Length: 260
Image 1 (cartoon, rainbow, N blue to C red):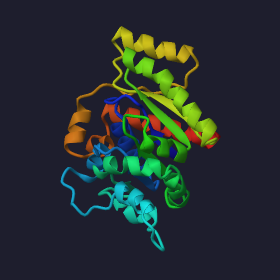
Image 2: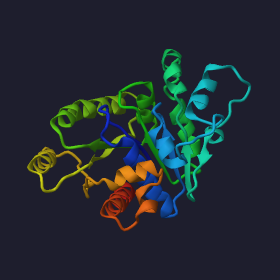
Image 3: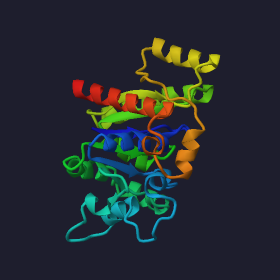
Image 4: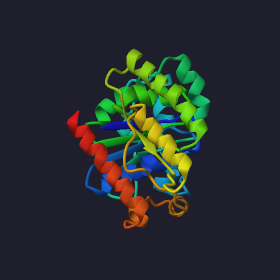
């Protein structure tokens, strides 16, 4: 299954969710790939560490070759890097993605990632794509390439208002470019069960018939430690409540995918 983790609002936990679900997938023995299309590179540093070599293969190099005439382009696999954990690989980000954005858009390279995933999908059981907090060339690439869209939701009024526009954008991509794309679910992040506002907001989404996934991901300072140590929760603290929620969420997604 190919998932894109997408939200046009920043700070909702896209990278954290993508990396932790991918780490659980790999820990369960599934060959798993994370593609980092956000030039900030949070997912890349989370899985590969904070000190990265300058010559690391990356997504910018993958896209840049499409702007040049070559007899034979490198395959997407040539830009993939192994993490320290078994079964978990990364197609790293690069700040150069920002510089390439306009050139790629003007040359209509929007389907390059979709074509690459047709080949990568034969090597990986699950692929998670982390996206920038905007509906730009790279997030559109990811939505066109993916099969399921996961939408982080952090239980505030701004997120709720943005959610409806986001769903419309996903539907437009589905109609115009990717009939196989579906909203795999809304992931409630940083949930505080004792607070009235988060409970009310989530319940209203459910009553509207939106695909809210369970379990909800609890707010925890442990995840900041996970970021600092560049170690996903399943490896940092397997018994932690948040880790168990991630495992249950991953397993629910797997079960849902098998029914499609």
